[in-house]
Length: 307
Image 1 (cartoon, rainbow, N blue to C red):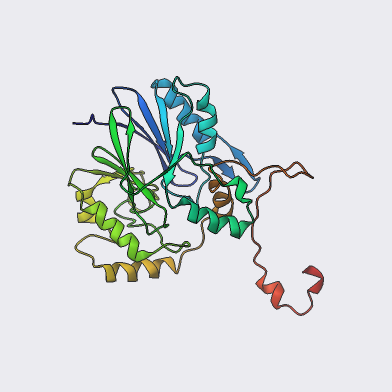
Image 2 (tube, one colour):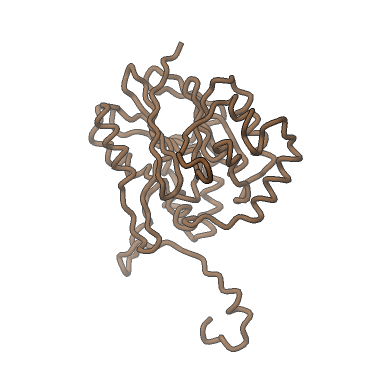
């Protein structure tokens, strides 16, 4: 029987993101899941408070990081994967950890590299391991498994360690329900099917979520619920919700949602594996593209000088 993994959950209030550190207690080998770089859109400043807190936790527990795992390309925060890999590369006996993600990442990279004019050379090869569906991989003495959970995005991969599954942006806390499905390649029908895969797990299995947004009577962030609790309480999935019912609710909700606050910055950095854009040869600045919405100007008769 595999040993029970140690799980540390670290919440970033700025983006509502759960970050995880999962470790084999016997070997002290560990994995980081869905890390966050701090980003201020008002100043365009990138800092490393979240990532440095993870590094301190790694050091205080004498962990050796084997894996830095991404569940998918996030649209709401910048990943700290490349920063963590760089910081850990020279500090560990076993060398630098591998950055892992699902095998469909290339599809998503090409989608957004084209949209934002990101040079393909800055995306290619930034992930060390592209995991196949149901692929098993070691974490010390633990046996981990990647499971495909599409719907929110087509590439989303969950990670199973013993009786724990880290599901990324698929299902959230029971009073929130599930993740949105209106990004390119997203599908409410697929997310329903992914959720059924999670809810079919044994009652006691802990499903660790990618985000939490507590409100109302619940003020405390909660990193996991069990499969049994989701079957009984999840607002989008409980009580035998049919696929047709779910799709209608999910698509109706998605039609009312605005885009994530950091979507343009996050996607451009995250398809690079957390690396920053190369500096401009002319200005020396690192630049991101943010699309303008100029419908009113396009419709105006006397604003030709503005366009």
